[in-house]
Image (cartoon, rainbow, N blue to C red; front, side, top):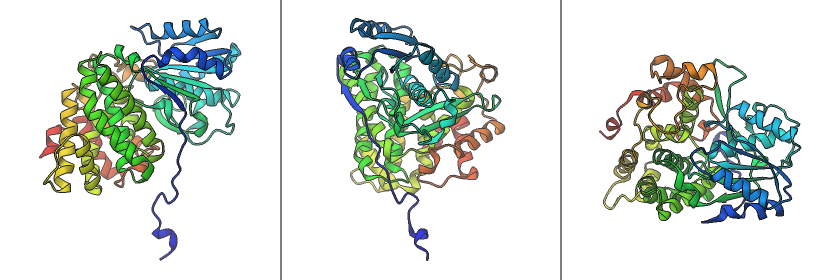
Length: 430
């Protein structure tokens, strides 16, 4: 037998760095002094606008108070699009900015990371950097990321996710770019900023955290330095999410989710992801639905799909979620973990199938709202055979799929996608 036949799929594992971070109540008030220390003079602020809150206004005014010039781009969309990134790049270049601040959740941070990479390459289209370390210039403009949600952990990871709407307008493609050059200069996580998050948005972001934590724990990469963070993030999420959702002013709930999302991102930063995220990216690409919602719908189905490969790891997950596994076999405990995930999903009020998601299903819904004719036409999630096929094919081409612990083919993944679209969660428990 040749040596290469004996090696695992990921024989060499890579640890990716984290940025410096300020975490805790009032941390966002330090952005002015921190920006000055980093040499900021004229800054492009990238955000969705966070309408309904005054967070952006307060941070911008604080920056101005400290003598910084500020230009604001507040049109970042959920599932940030390539044109969001390139519009921001144009604004940055026109105003001779020298730095970036992103305010919001993963969409704002991801769009900003993509814009930095583009700026560092003289405004080349962000879609050219899909994949792994495609940038050629490692020196990007400095970037402070201020998080207002407990979800993606983009402020501390080397990944950013963009939807390509221009290469093939009739088939949008949501991709992950992994690039060490995109890591932020400073992350600011302040749980006080989470208080204004809507209830349903908080719940969806929380399931993004659970996906970020559970996928590296069972990943094919099997990266030991990620496992402790992954398991602790699961524990924090199970302990804190219900409180954060239903008691939005609970500092304990918000702080717990802040820490959970931060260390979950550090877990997947080197430990990898799987097809929970691949399915989420595909559904976002075609329907512009919220990433956290997509992860929530996909998570129980993918756990059920992957459990036969890793019963022991899923038994650990059950314990982390508060299940008393004493006296259970690993198989029984793994099944209890699945039941606990479904209980959590139902407790925080998330739709259980993609076909149940309508235009009024949640507060941040963009289903059928544009911005292109493609998305205006995709106003109802069909879930028919053709829909399941196109989503499955997108999943198989996603950068997260190779890390999935169970081998993924069209034949094995299609039933999982179909169940996400149309299946009853109770079927997984029988």
